[in-house]
Image (cartoon, rainbow, N blue to C red; front, side):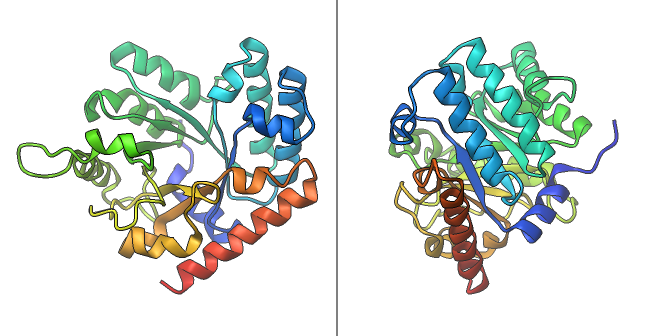
Length: 279
């Protein structure tokens, strides 16, 4: 199968729509805040509103799979429809599933999110490399075939992550740097941007690692988690031009009014553009 690589499509989307990813995270508390019941009907209304308000204007929408899976097959059906409608409206869909396993099981996860024949086929998916980077090979290979992307957890914003990600290997590198070096190798020679990205929290301060992977850097933590667009140059340094900041509650709490969702997304996009232009 031949298609334009995800990295090229993402670069174009970021340049035209703005460098912003908006998460679709239907927390029970957000459903309540929107005046919706914490059930499949509330989930469907929440998701449809977010997609209709944002998919024609933001670069990336990032549904968090767990908040749909908790409702079983009916929740997954809502997710399938959201993916289809968001992509039809022009947004790239990054499935936040954080899958990680080995062998045929990793291959099954890859088929779920990176096979064009799957009802959950997405433009990219998040994965965990901490069973060894080689365990991701089925997903990496599937992404190449379908022109999709893979975002690999590298330095996450949760405090617990440091005990694994900051641990050092025999040559003295932090484990996160080992993963980032693998990503750089996967993206070598890609233009204008590689399709294998890293997840690096925007709340980290100085990341303390080399983030020049020639691929996108998904930066969760903007908004409710405490980071601001102005923090991005300090965290990402010379690689800041490849950053895709992600905000969820900072936009979603403006619902259920569609205009409020759009205004919040536009404000964050403008703030990110200003921060990156000054870097």
